[in-house]
Image (cartoon, rainbow, N blue to C red; front, side, top):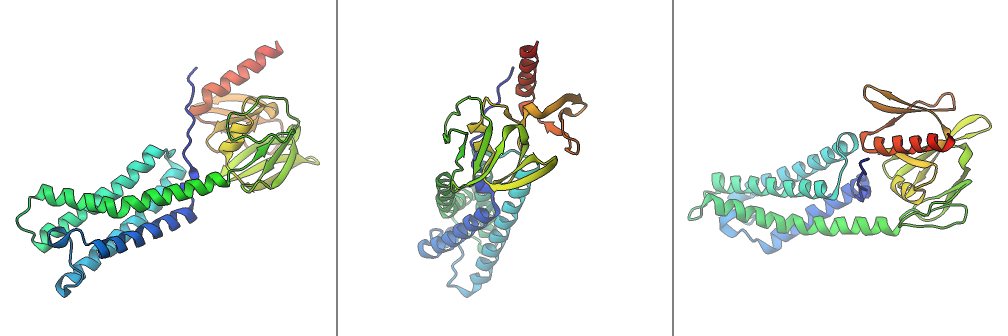
Length: 294
């Protein structure tokens, strides 16, 4: 059986609030950096003090800001719908922004400023390197700030013995699932026999459980990854990037043309999909449960 690698990417980097804060800081830093340092001089930068170059400078700045905004909007939707973001993919995306802005600056320098005495290669490389200094530093600083802030607010998920762990979870029999928010405040306690599944919504999770014969839901600000890590090797199992299910409540595991699906023993709950990443571990879990019963 193939083992899927744990993705430790901090999804807080893709929260809209953090994207806006990071982008705002990066743009302000870059503008201050370019005004104070003026590293390109006459070879690759447009002197804002010269009236004939002011419009060109303003065009470059506005176009770059619009490009960064559109890039982050695209990143947000792509990561939510199509691509499972990793630190490598995130870094390559930011590097791509830097290269494209640097190349755009080099193009304007060669076409409109008419820089002489320098090769095209030199102008392009210098533009990209200075753009790296202008944007790379705030990119790194803002990413570290967001990640550290998220680590400090890491959800404390505990079992009935109130053992919280951000490391390897301890396998044990549990009757009660206690879930706290990202500040460590207990928000929900639900019996395992009443819990059906947990769904991720950005940095929130929605817990679905039964009460008095009715299906209820409760939203908590926490990360599904922490719940998976804490309750690993228990009946709670990750089957999809957005779902954790209580395997004790699964009635049928079936295979369709587009993959496996789980049906619950509660009428009204839609089938939960099993992604290819988790299909091997899910099949292994249910095969093991069957063999134990036999």
